[in-house]
Length: 318
Ligand code: UT7
Image (cartoon, rainbow, N blue to C red; front, side, top):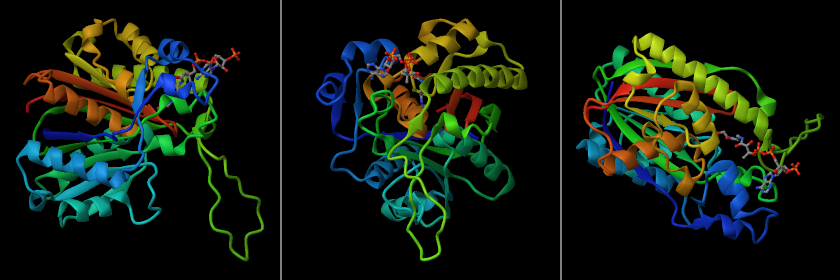
């Protein structure tokens, strides 16, 4: 595959750390030191589908294609206000596309899984352009009284258009069932027949330290594997575009690969963790700021609830 267009969209509401101090026992100093996050964007009046459609339109415009030229849409999403239909169906209608759509829920790793599916579809089907849209509102999943989790997340959408090409040098996705590290349960509609007790966790339940350790160990393993698959060394990578969860996670991974800080772009200071939207939205920021050069090798790595993980090596040729 080859990425030929990128796009992103974020909510207008900026929530700074000091705004959180108004209703949480926390401080700007604690959040910045432990996470690197200064502020995040949180949905207030927008609908997630509006952000998703804007990111999709930006990516199509950037790729120089129209909605009729999109042959397939993959949407990565954990929650939105619709239980059904999938968000991809809604995006299809909003942008005026007519192709099939598929939603995946692979948490923060969704973009890497979507790339993996796109690569397989491009290789096996008569498709030209695939639109990947990662649209997430994790802020709506949080318990805003839980200071250890709600401070981390923000809402966003990121999109790419991919076509046939040979820029993908290696890709790997994996899942290790570890539900207890990070999950949310909700009560479904009662029926006259339900006899079991059901749980509503009223937000995400997360063991931050476990997730931190899983994130670093799995990302290190994935990076090692994709480098081996591509026959490359850590030095051959120009930029490590990592899931934007915590600057300390990025630093731990950086120490492992022993590479300069300049190779690890980040925007989590302004946007927090936006789940699967984080990598495509960061790619879009980098591309629009002319920070990606043709021929550069990018290593993408993500991890999230599941525990799902994934990484790939991609040549930038836009
Ligand atoms: O896409 C994956 C999504 N999830 C993640 O990326 C989470 C990964 N984990 C992390 O980023 C970190 O574990 C956290 C940022 C969540 C927590 O940082 P930590 O350095 O692991 O802190 P901790 O959980 O060990 O807590 C240290 C202290 C505790 O107080 P005591 O028990 O030492 O008195 C916490 O209650 O910090 C307290 N604390 C806070 N204090 C002020 C936890 N959250 C806050 C807060 N403000 N927001």
